[in-house]
Length: 336
Image 1 (spheres, rainbow, N blue to C red):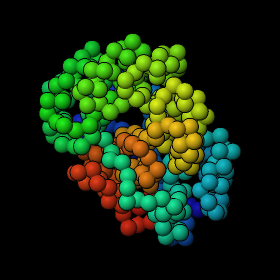
Image 2 (cartoon, helix red, strand yellow):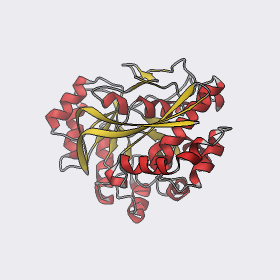
Image 3 (cartoon, rainbow, N blue to C red):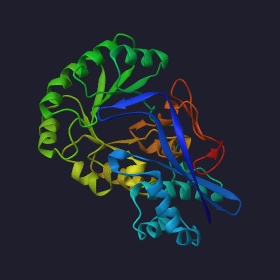
């Protein structure tokens, strides 16, 4: 295989704010793996919360480029084991694994979901994210993008008031993501009010390691609670089982499609609701997530929809939430 690395700075359509940060752009790394005239693409973004930079990922890949390029891609799963032996960061693993899966599908001439034996005719609708801003600005964002399901980022002193105001303008399903900003008491108190306002579930209300608080929330919350920051890698799935109703798997955090599929399998065995989420990323990462859609209960794959301009083509999400899978095999990705 031949490897090429491309760094992009993705400009966002709006300032994106969650409980711990705001940004107007997002740096991302695109990994290109080529063989026999085909090229597979993978992506991983920088992330200060997890201490990862584009330069760190590029350095890891360049240091191991000979071992990567000499590998004969017999399967993405075997390639993943090969990569793990190099001690790469999970974000780096993700970019390489996504590229390998896309390339493998293109070499096989089939989309990944077909290789995995799943039916793409039924899938959950992605939510569209409304980041934290003034209430007026959040209402403006909602009006600008009519959508059947919204994820609302919270973690302010006006959280309930925000949801009450947004509800005046839409009948859409609401999902709440507090990004670890609440206490157990706040969560339990807010849940009945939010349920009455049409909220479907709460995502990661407490700090990632507040297991005692999550035990109370799991027992007393009238809304289901989905783990995000508490569920990063494969071993976290079983740990989260007693404390959450479901898990949100992020490909960049867990290391790519290969471990994500194992997390989905384990989650099903434990009776957990399954969601896959995205970072603020291009259609490279989003198209990889889309291959998992038939296996999921919920999905958050609006990352490319939040950009001023995309850098790739692949899966297309229509205005009603319908997903159009590309005819190109693999994850169906092409750089623009």
